[in-house]
Length: 434
Image (cartoon, rainbow, N blue to C red):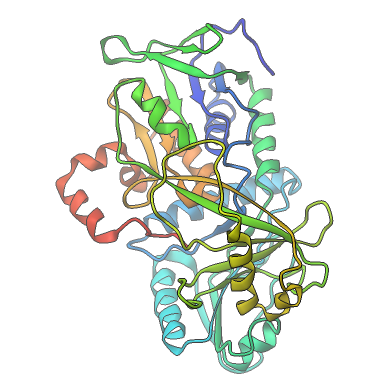
């Protein structure tokens, strides 16, 4: 896959995570740009793109319809890719299931669902009696419902009997589920390489930007690639690459962890959706997650609970508090009591990576102040699910094509607008984050 003789490129893509691979795919396969060179000092998809829970959802509760429209388009692209690849990455539509034991949370779920429905999520269906709810299917997505189903009282407990007995309602988001992100990334990369793109296992150490325009990039090996267009998709390494051009953007990092445990007792059914408990548990906030995943043994679960969101300095490899495993398991056992049967006699692996975030938790996609330099970064928790559309969007910028009207909300230059900065302060940093 390497070609050190390559010293000229029409576009250099810095980073071989999902964002960089998607950008290279849309540049080479969809826009016909032949000399696309992807540079990364790691193997593709091995920094943060393979560390998440690989979920996707068209559930984005505001502050407007921007993120919902972006991710809905990305889901369109993923479904098309799944169809053309024979669903090589096992995209399903099991949905996200938000469960609660609190009347106030149930009312909040309904209010929010009506808002997101108005943005274009699809119809909200409310079920208080038997007969109208259509269960999800474990595999695939063709013909599955869209919108959301709000199951109240006995309807929630009947459809999902493994939930806590005090559950009074559950909101099932239907155009949602998960996929194998590594498999999708590899498929996109294979198509990009077949279209003429090149992967170079190396690291960009400097960017020559004479007269305010990109001219070349220098690699740690000493090689130089002459190019006038550079797409920076460096994940949490974004600030360091920006510094090479004396640029800075308002981004920071959060460390996010997940736990992988085995569930041989099948406390969580293998066909379950992505289950999320909305209520606080003890002193910790709501939002504990669990979903089945097929790994070595076929009985694994991913558990995640984002109760720490303080900014952290980016450092690789990350260090995790091993008590996180027990905390997640206890939280999930509150939601799914069958997990309590394991007590403390359960092993699990804690891993994860850094979210690279903007203050309002929206990606950065578009041209930078240095001519020929573009960014596709700060994807935060939307990385895998939004990358297909964001890769397409940055390729449209590079190729000078017409842009979707939501493109303006992702431009790095948005921070130059005082009115936007004021809006950003009102929204806060957790917009769209579960």
